[in-house]
Length: 124
Image 1: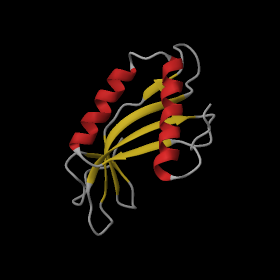
Image 2: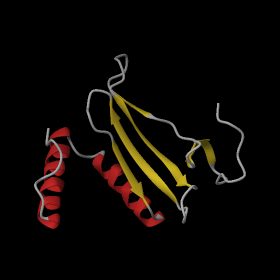
Image 3: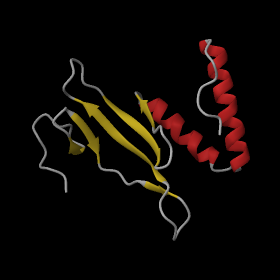
């Protein structure tokens, strides 16, 4: 159960640390087939750091797989961007797993071109 709200907490805060990290209440979306062990989770929640010079609220999108070395945390700084991410996720529901992998490869290739770096991620 979350602690009582502190005076420095945003009104939506339900979980906070001594380091000034505040998160809203959220449900994790379980990854993996029903009746089998969970492989990880997806989540979205409001987030704020209050122990900084210019605290800002934002949305954090998270994807965690227990057997992978890197977790995914994407900060979303504006309501417009959050809306765009939500629409993208809704449209991704129409794609097949193969199409998801093709899009991931396109994102890595575009990032390499745009930022002049080697393609990022494992590409699995």
